[in-house]
Length: 282
Length: 263
Image (cartoon, rainbow over all chains, first blue to last red; front, side, top):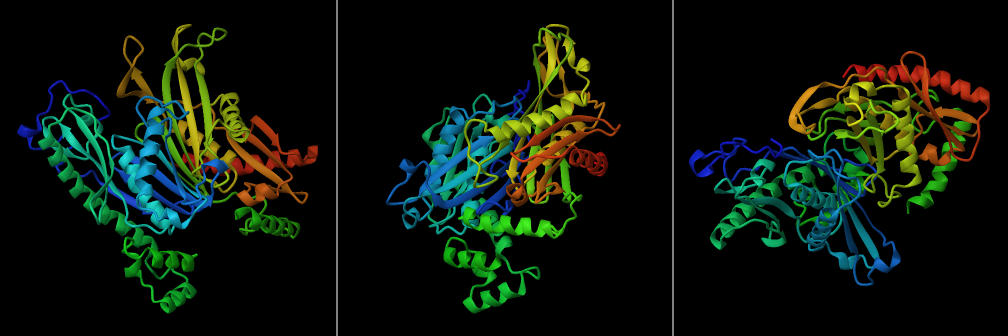
């Protein structure tokens, strides 16, 4: 699967099926778990096809070095890193230009949804680590990071859902894998939206494409993001759901505050209640 | 925020140790329970995810063809790297490798290298020109102390489940084709201790490391040998204490090894 060129190049228009058997607008299997790292204020682990990523949120905390702080808002710092063994050719351990660029665009996308003005002079540090990859690791990281922020109980306008879309083997496709990304006519468009308002928070592209094809790809991407949003909500709800394992005292307090598991299941509208739910669970 | 609670927590750890107890109820010679998952990461030539208590470590192996050292033209090499990711603890920062990262990587490396776990002669492709170099890197994902032992378990499990890629006539690696499993001649494992209030505890947690006066690690093998030692921090041990820790390390290492071998 990993980047090997095929002698007989597939043609999706004829094949009606992709190299891994998916339909054109089908995502690879995606699973998310939140609250996986006890040390972090919020965390998530995500598996998306062969991609496996961790995301952790530390903060809001003192912004260091001090000159990075803003008196008007929290600064969102993102570090995107890949393990040396997460790619077919061993990656050099030190961050490269690609890592830096991705960190920057992820930070800017996440900043769009956090009420940063509520935490002046602080930093919200988001760390994403790729331990295994097969195309689409940045959107996997962004999807995981958004869940980790919600898990940290930060006030947010919306979640962020992200996916790759674009073109490969002569057809518009969703969520390209490595083989499709290496296709001769490949166009890769990492896309992230705020699923409730359809605002675009991240958009990159490389490859040759017409405006008409681009719009078809984006429409497919937006639809994919909505499906991802449902998975994100479910993952968050799973953590905050009251079960027989929830300590009795936490249940009692939650009752008093009239917060319920179903409220926690809607992170976009009920962020504040979620903070409460987390507090009592601890 | 964390540091203000810390002073109190440390005092509590010390007080409990004085009474012969540990915060998590373990005995002084008892490791935390751990789980290992192997070969979860498909881009690596071998990998492991280890969760030791609340400490989580992932390790992966990449095999590369390189030039041998001029003084040893037939032998391959191993390089162990460790990163305490900022993800793993609010105390950790990214940037150039810290002293702690370099120390833990080198101690784990020595245990494996000096324990002759790998047969470097078998890593020879063409004498003086091409040999295999095993890059073994591990990352702290969540840190609750004792990255030494967690890293050592992860690295050993990775090697035990590692594969050697196939190469073509020009010594270039062929993607996704393998010659077979790596053969291990020995299975060295680190066991780490700390001294708190004059008592010796195996497998310290984060708080116990903070409360510790001094630290000691020893790598033991299944055939009764030791392949690496490291004393750390500004306290000291008596020779009797060192001998006691060696005895415990063999006992603990045997149990740990058994669990990894079952995979």
